[in-house]
Length: 376
Image 1 (spheres, one colour):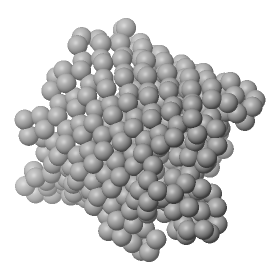
Image 2: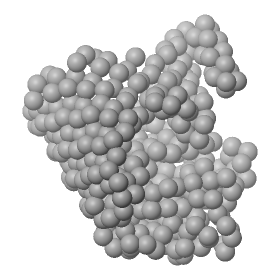
Image 3: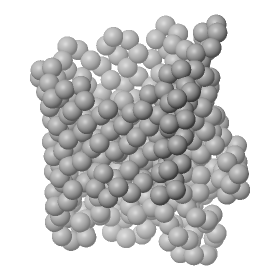
Image 4: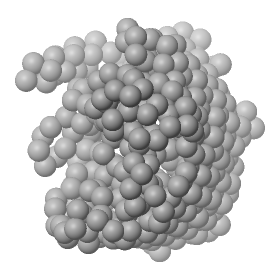
């Protein structure tokens, strides 16, 4: 309760004193049917099909000579329980301040990695499918399931369609000695028909730097694993997480096609009580995407994801439809199917595990979701 009171007081103070302060949010809820979660089908109300329910505040102070001081606070929550997401943080999604100038934008604080900035808008998850269409339990963090604490980010102005970005976070940069160093770079290009982007990202000690583990993993010791998905649970005790990726979308008329690729490498995995693997494990994710805008209100989409893990393979088919009722209200219907083969990260027979759903008891899992998203 104290955290909510503090957040409300901060919001009121900033709204009263900023030259331009905008309070915004989103409410997203729906009904999801899953064929197999731990051996049983399930029907459940699920939050955030197209993105977490959230609230936020944008602050903008205009200075001289084209300079601005900006701030962004954003927190996620479960609309069905009212509980905060992102480890119980009030502003767990984003919390940063910065300066915008003719030379670019520099921001400091808790922010998304450049993986999301680069590819979410080029993917099936971002274009139509929502969180469950992200790559194999979002092990590449393209959906932005986890934010980075204590980082500096730079975004350049657009030069002839090109844009550059860089991110840096020192080890222990948020007064947390267990946090590793972080650095990322990206480049993107866009014109009327083409959108493309590529990135490189390095995160040291991902268990504590990214996944919110309570303590660093120690070889041969017990480790409270913060990840539930068997797809990559066994690798999160790695000493470093290294990612590269690229994507492209091409639009012609009302049709859009796209392709994305990411490589997720868990380097020097430490063997613990809950991470039996040791060494380096890699995921290669390939995605094909297509959408078609039938009318100003109706959008159809489909995508196929192929993920080759270290010892397992995951294939996923996604399809969906959007109906836009107004600028603020959207209805959606989504279908997902995942197939798993091989041995998963925990050394067990691989099972299907759609993102943000409980794992299946077999290599097959499908889900259907209908919902509504409202923004303000």
